Image: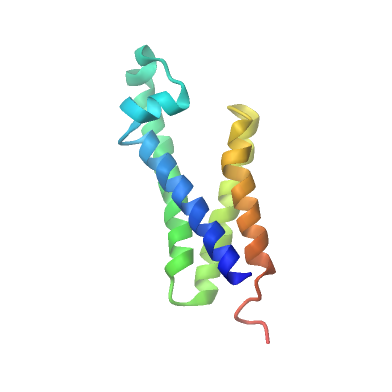
Length: 125
């Protein structure tokens, strides 16, 4: 189960890294198209999307730390924190923006969290 959890956490991390890129450096091109933003709205929304992108970057960073931290207890804590934040943000986005966000963010985060919680902790005897 540890391998499954690691793969799922990495997938969620990569999803949020991609969202970060779409909302920041790629917003005026690819990001605009992915999010369905009209060209005449791009300049007005760019600062807001960039700010939102930073938050997605922070989520990806927390998950990355969870994957690579040398202390497995600390790594697990980062992964749980990151996955819970992603799931909550996905629920909020699904309710306030678009239901598709639930499938893109919340479902993968909950699957990864479930797999991680089913993986025995290093503290388990």
